[in-house]
Length: 120
Image (cartoon, rainbow, N blue to C red):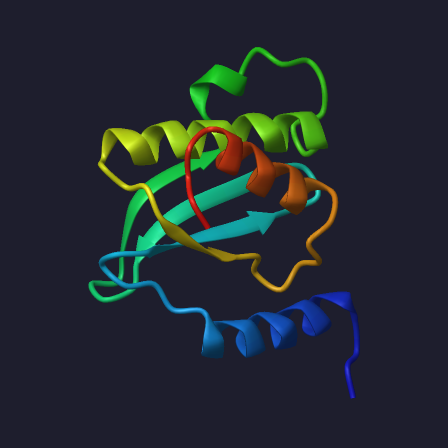
């Protein structure tokens, strides 16, 4: 029996990770969101290394007076991760939503990354 929302997300995440695995051709784009921030990483699962990362804590978001865990910021993080991935030569990824519903900030990040050139 699931006790709280975090446990539910953890169980969903474990279930998703059984199926979603990045390769050298298609690395994994992992998303994590907290109440106040949004994080994204492109991970090489074969080596176990983070290749590219972006978050709402990056220097370009420091001057924002508004809350950094909103949809607008998630879109900017999505386009930032796609730009950094293109610099490293990464075009195709597998999307790992991290157990979160594909809605709101997670959806905004994914769509912005697609618009900026990532394929998944």
